[in-house]
Image 1: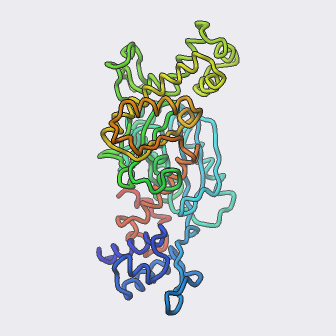
Image 2 (image 1 turned 30 degrees about the horizontal axis):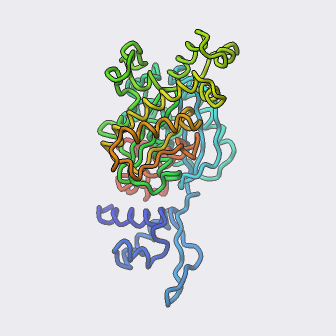
Image 3 (image 1 turned 120 degrees about the vertical axis):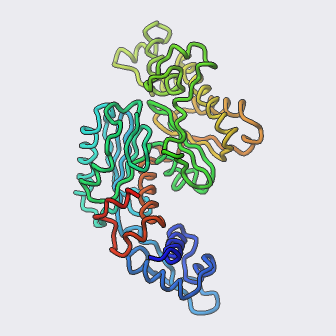
Length: 417
């Protein structure tokens, strides 16, 4: 397909898909394309099943035009979000609507073979429910750095055995569709900016505080992955020079004094266990008798006023907030969203983070800054994984390679470039 034809085809599709134009006259006016070109491109898109003409729109003096609609039901996307202590799988339409999903408790340290076997089991169960649309692609988020071009994790600190594992290749061979893999925080950020509180926010930072800590960056409305795909890995910012005793805390990445090792969910659980063992917190000591402490136990204890738990959360919030303040000064986002099992729970952590960011950032950078908890809870990553796949499939780089065949299914190499 000639480049100019492909450009106009994608432009027309995107305008209808994102609701920027709903009729032929609107398309012509907004895209700056002639009536003949609009008719030709719509013919291609309607013929491929991506668009359809529906009811009559409002008349502006002549014959009422037919409204155009993106056919989100034309295909489906399998999505998975892998966390340190659990995973989720789902099925969406092409508009990112989550149709069905399943969750499972899981330890990512079990390795890629066992983990992806469970993902495939969940995918198969979702497909067995009989959704009528064919699967067009798969999107996966994992809790570690990913080389986006190859779909392979690279030296992920909390994922032993995953370094260089061909996640994309395995799932593509199993389901015969294109597969994209990204850091789960990136998919969460994309889910929020397209379907959450950050919708229509051009510059945003999404911070996940769970077992570890990571950030997803959105700049100019687009996800910023960086040159290799590891932008936003704030969990391994070194705090050795600013936090007493940080040099004695070894992170899972092998370095010392990382933000994650001092303020992440695993750090909260570790420090709470020490406090309970030393008798400084009867509440946590009582909970410890029932089994190993988790970060959410600290959140719960703090909500009931336990001084040790309150101190631990305030300290974690201060360290996260001071780290974010550097990003806020450097990047000047309009919004910071907190997610993850720890980040999205309780007001104390949120208040501590806000206080540190506002105290350490420039007044202009925080004048209109919003800092809030994610409203999408655990679904942001699944939605973002779906948007990632659909955006790639309908991009200028890929649409022309499959639209003539009617479907990207059966063309797993589309994801390779």
